[in-house]
Image: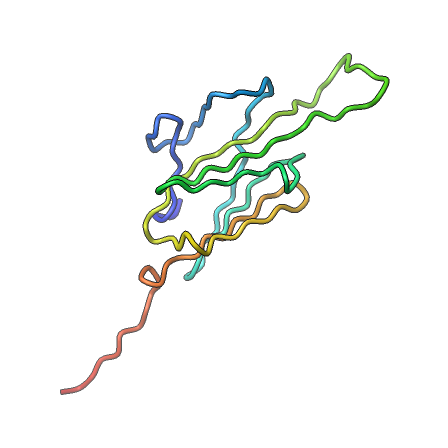
Length: 135
């Protein structure tokens, strides 16, 4: 995982397993996330099937980035669910950001159940070429 981004658990410790208290009776899943790095930004792609754009909540408080996606159970008028093989639930994942991320320029979008987050690196974190002058 890039040094600008670390996963934290519900106790505020660095780790890989995330458990959270819920207020909804649904299951809570940790979305599988791919992280790509370029010289000027990080790209996170989180799989959150069934989550629509208006059901995603992304918060950034201090250095903690929290991703939460809510999935509403499908309803079929006149039917009661008697058997299900597919587990439906919400999604939650928490990351700690370093100071090398430009918090004001973070972008997010959702398409086909995939959350795309672009985390630009701050200007001071970008590699730069230093000119050498002769004396």
